[in-house]
Image (cartoon, rainbow, N blue to C red):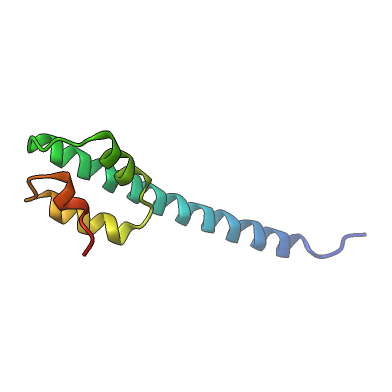
Length: 85
């Protein structure tokens, strides 16, 4: 005799899949933005020391990465990019 919970289980499983998919998208955007910052600095000839590279790639806050990205367009040093607001 069935418990009648199969629909509920399917709903819960689907919500977990959706949540995981959303988290994956955000993680992908964060990783991509960090790579963009490093690349734009490299293309512009701005040295990216190992410590700065680690700080950029370790950052998981997309809003902070967006600020750093905008700064990377004109900054002449990584210190200027990573400076506290």
